[in-house]
Image (cartoon, rainbow, N blue to C red; front, side):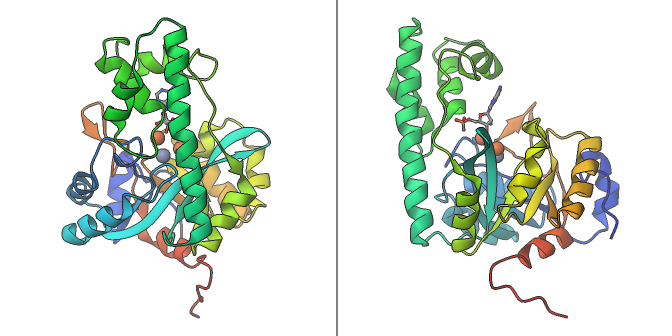
Length: 295
Ligand code: AMP
Ligand code: FE
Ligand code: FE
Ligand code: ZN
């Protein structure tokens, strides 16, 4: 099959008739998204999606509610997570799909990641206070209200306390790499995260390769046992997406895509802004450990 150059909004005509469409990268307030699972499922249905995956950072906690909400909206649901990993010293994100939340090694690893994230919030607040920024830890934890908090929660708390003008300014001034409150996260080697995902019955996809600005890492990450490459993403240009789709073919990876919706973006919910033909989801499902290809 020929893939459209971009399954994004501008290519909507190409995918409307191509039976069903998916968005495989979504966040809720169980990590740093702002939507509840119910609101996310409703908006996904309103955007005409048929298949969605929840991929909160380092947690599967939203998947139970999301599965139920998707059932009510008539959507097919894939339970997933976005794991924090590293390759050659760089942070990379590995999306896991069809994960079994009862798998013990995965459960233990996620709990460890969440503990480190919580300690990290405290360290960020300490550093802000040291720099004369009077944010309290309670202001962040009350706003976050989840076990897998991150920098976006600190950014929102800074804005709410009048200590930053807006979300992006909070990142620019305090939170991005090199700024006073930047603290790195716990991350596992890519091979470890891919093995954990496979051990929990899932498939592993490299998230938003365009954001790492180091395409040379991709073959190395693929060699860890990757199943797919997220070619279509909100922050990829059409040219990047086309190039990543070609690279996916070369590396025997399934080309996938998702919006990476964290809530509203410029007065629009991002969910559904990337529309992946369902055939790609079927190809990905065929990579599940134990899946039998039917000939
Ligand atoms: P964390 O996992 O705590 O390091 O936070 C990473 C999240 O923060 C990403 O998923 C993005 O949603 C967001 N983020 C990272 N960098 C920026 C930035 N420069 N401006 C706005 N949001 C960002
Ligand atoms: Fe995020
Ligand atoms: Fe990510
Ligand atoms: Zn994400």
